[in-house]
Length: 69
Image (cartoon, rainbow, N blue to C red; front, side, top):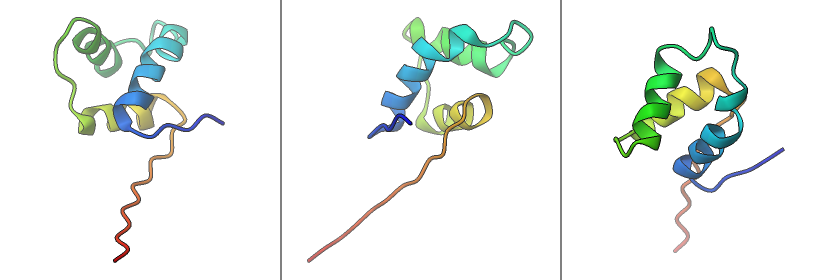
């Protein structure tokens, strides 16, 4: 199990490690446009990153915010 501290960090890992292994029929639409935008300097929002990670990877995303006075 691999853990990440930020969505962009997880997305960067997914782009480099998971995206290349996706079958050609899956590399259409969302994943390829996100890959293109990310690798060629376009913008990819965190919301879009989350959607890609959940839909095309085996990611569980939890947000934990703690305030301790």
